[in-house]
Length: 100
Image (cartoon, rainbow, N blue to C red; front, side):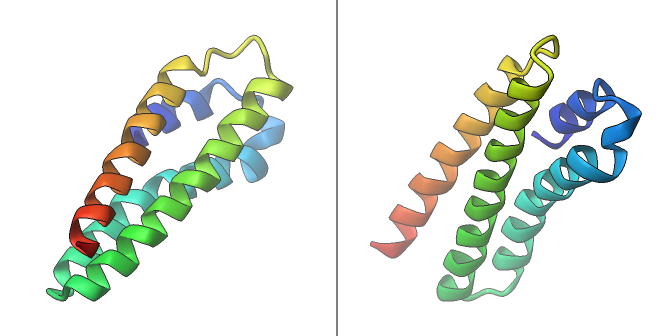
């Protein structure tokens, strides 16, 4: 997801460097960062909390991809949308499993 976000960001105009590009990249990097940090805490409660933050970052990225799709219809976003959907499903499943 991170690699796809960076690839997508390169297609955006320079005028988005400090807008969508920066925001999308931060959101994308935040997903695996929160997963990793939560796991390192060695507590199920902390892990669930950080997975929830990762899920929130995925939601942010989803919004940014929607904006890119609307504002720059010539830029292909399908791969990013597919990967993001898969990441969200995996996070949801993991959070649900850990809560039970």
